[in-house]
Image (tube, rainbow, N blue to C red; front, side, top):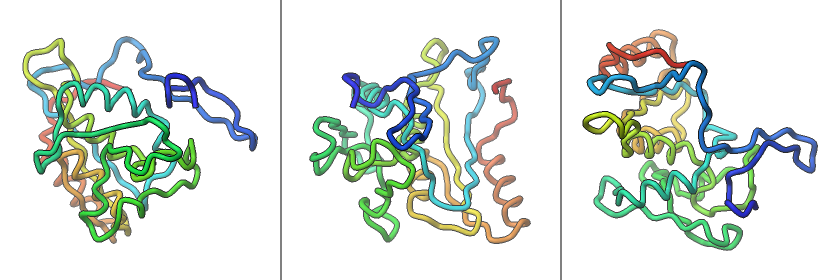
Length: 204
């Protein structure tokens, strides 16, 4: 583990797998941004055939520090917690994991296949719901009037994994399960309508 926790430079693992590292943010070409107007509604629509993997290559500690500084709260009113100390032995690192609200346990979403660092952060080894929580609770453009946030809608194509539902809940969006192409189209159109993405700007 690096001295700055999970922020890493790209490197090759001991098994020969290239890992891209975890930078805090990249400079987009031409200065493009995902939020360019303070009047726009912002959303992400995730379509997945199952639970996400390799979703912990993000600067989780930095995101949690920013959220805690803003005293971010879960929907039940409790303050967000995150303690990255001694991740190998810490029995409850906190963070965002709502799998226990969808007929599973938080540990059930602690899959480690393809994830790194394996074994760290019991109860919160996977961060896609943390990212969705960050985007829906933080002001993404504090140089603009108001609070610019982003909702996350999730469509499970033939799958209803609890992690997918946790992501949608954390992102203040909705979860849909689509089993047919027509249902997939209908849910995407519904999510577009819910997010009112009629004035999005250019972004890669």
